[in-house]
Image 1 (cartoon, helix red, strand yellow):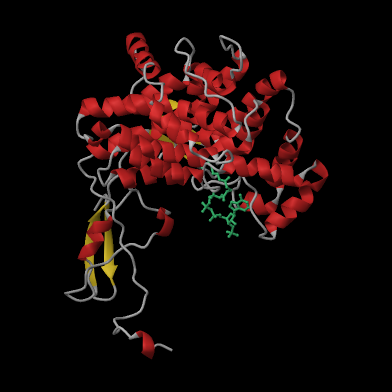
Image 2 (cartoon, protein in one colour; image 1 turned 135 degrees about the vertical axis):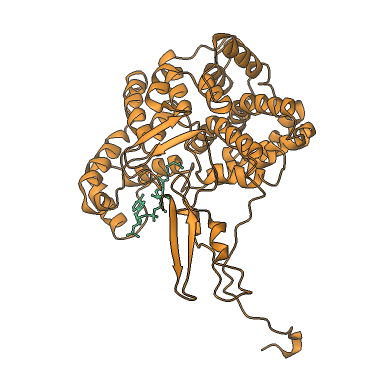
Length: 428
Ligand code: CMC
């Protein structure tokens, strides 16, 4: 029989046919396999979701073996070359590239929502001067939930649109304010005449000049980096967005959780960790000793390896090219030589080759950010700004998917069997 799986349960000798759809079987179909009649049925055990599809999605396609990444069917290389972040955000959220009129309306809608409520500014002023900008970012996004109670109308399309505009538009402003706060400079108001990325640079770096003008090469490079970070299907933070959103909470609360997941050094915090690692290595001559330590299990080579990519991360290839363009303007980042030597050694070393560990998106992006003048603590925030579009798209897809319910995994209980409470005096 085609497209079915025949399973024989050797505990009972019974045979079952289970349907195969899109290369998967339904885990709940296994519940019919029972050792005895009152057995709850067979479950699958899959810590960290190594082999479990949690949804059907039309948003992002990845072939990890071939190093392919596509947003809504469009190859990442083409988008990086021809699109802009705002256009790509539209594509990811709405499913199609916008017409000229749609793009104009979208750009206008985003531009009109870039300002922050004065009370949000006050809230941000309350953070310590050395607060990590990613902590500031994620808690401010969470605080939005109290400023926009209309966001609770998650099944009202108009309300969702409004929250989408607010989120995409305001995350750069939060990020810029977090940065200015950390260096003790006054916040810069958004400039609606600038592009999305140009305005972000204005809010970050404008000093006393009346009109900020960014370097076009750097503005373009940042825009390309934003495009590359828009979405990456069911990664840790996106699953967090879907999981939290499945409880039907408002999108700001869900996104605060997604941003928290991104903050970790194994995910979006890796770009920051790469820079710290390169600084720690210090010089090209120390690279072999560092690689030796990694191979001995003393730490990881940050910016290397990926759960899905078992070949070169296609984003890393584009970033490497972008780095050359940026360094022509800013001068070479002195850490680049260490990174190149690390990559050279790792790509021919048995340890990394046999485990299919290649540079990922975070390996070179930090070098660009640093050359552009960002402190390392801003790196995860620079990841979160464009990923907002991906999180929103995935959140909305999850909400409108009739197959989705509140996320609630099962467990294998391995704790103590039932026992009686022991009064304090009798405990030894
Ligand atoms: N350096 C050294 N060894 C590594 C590394 C690394 N970066 N990554 C994986 N390994 C080894 C690991 O020790 C294991 O070896 P063994 O089989 O001998 O125990 C093997 O490779 C498989 O690793 P794993 O931990 O089972 O793989 P995973 O899929 O659970 O982890 C990862 C994926 C990205 C968390 C991991 O590769 C890692 O920690 N990389 C460094 C952090 C990093 O760069 N993260 C950014 C990911 S891309 C951006 C994003 O989407 O967030």
